[in-house]
Image (cartoon, rainbow, N blue to C red):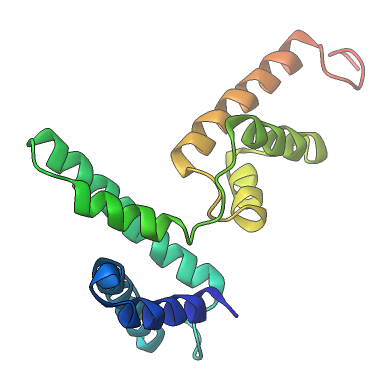
Length: 166
């Protein structure tokens, strides 16, 4: 069962759950509706059901929107319990986030296997192999730090492969 089908199944169960699951049903109904709209959209490059990557992207955008709404509501002193509940519900569909150590390891391995890699190359590897498991801004900053450190090592002649003059 792909992620989109799982959302629809969970929506069906939430609707049958009565008043206890009304908030979950409402959140899932909106998300499934957006996914179905995207599926029928002319902007989409192919036809057929949404794949997991497209569904995951939609969930991530929704969670990011909720994070922004929660932040704004908190700054205004408003109650955020409902939005935080909805965020928790939707975050359960996201893959487990990489730790900073795991992210650094992936970036370092990419730089080891692709010595001439630049920021775009590192981000492509992350997007291809670890989609949805990292924060893009954090990955960019950490990649730039590791790339800068590598450039510093090259300038100092401390990388493997001999001295600078070779």
